[in-house]
Image 1 (tube, rainbow, N blue to C red):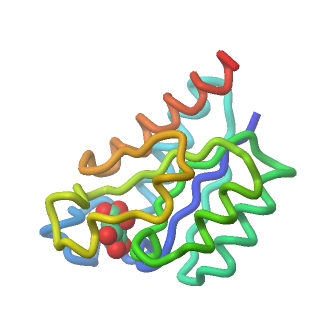
Image 2: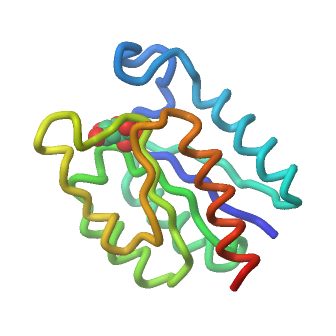
Image 3: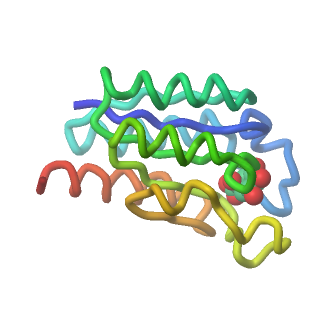
Length: 145
Ligand code: DQA
């Protein structure tokens, strides 16, 4: 039982990047938190980051074969990518969208998400904890299905 955790552009720089908004937690820290949570529930995680929209789409498609659901922080592509919404609908895997920051409390261009209409649920504003909560919710969803 495997989940994909996919991370979009600039999230490789977490810890260095705008620490006033995103804090000191690194992507490696988040990966460890996710793996620990999943293992405690008897699941495994494939954790990846890319700065490239097409590579993320390839992974969403690949997840059909290797995973039962996806935790997805699409980062800035959240607000621009029709292709992500189409990819999520195409694979019909449950996706939980996660953002570290509260996108609704930030600039108005961050208030709209192309991903949310295709997502099972959305978590934002809870920093790295959002990923852990998303894993718990997705596993519950899959195990009760
Ligand atoms: C983000 C929010 C996006 O608006 C932003 O472009 C990011 C990170 C978050 O996790 O808070 O890169 O997805």
